[in-house]
Length: 161
Image (cartoon, rainbow, N blue to C red; front, side):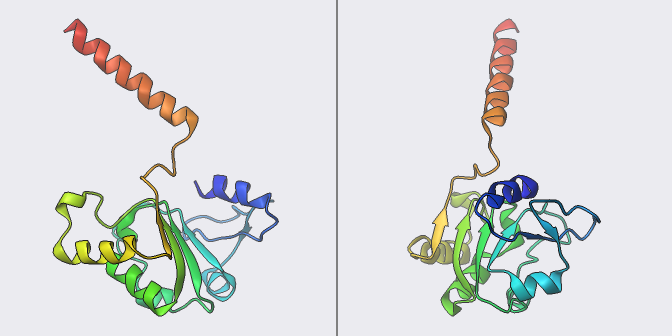
């Protein structure tokens, strides 16, 4: 996802800095390999393309955000549990996050929100600084087609049983 996003951004003439804690020599014509201090210093937009692991669970917190020299825009198409709704709300209110586009949330099941999650989600949902998408950022025509083929195959298998 990160590589595809950088490729698309390159047509806008922006400088893309990429950080991967576990890889080396991944920079290319679309994205320059960078250390986190450089990203903290220069970034205007933080786009997350990380898996959910013990290490990344609620990784984006107030301390992490305060390392950024500038107030930033946040794009999260990775995993919702890398940032709490409360953290996001507080960062937007303070101006540290100038705006956010969220394809994922801390809790993807609205009916299972805690009272705190519900309150912060309501604040975010009415904010002019937040855009929500329906968890489809990673979808491509090919992935959508594959999902439908698998579904058809499963329905056919049920009819045969």
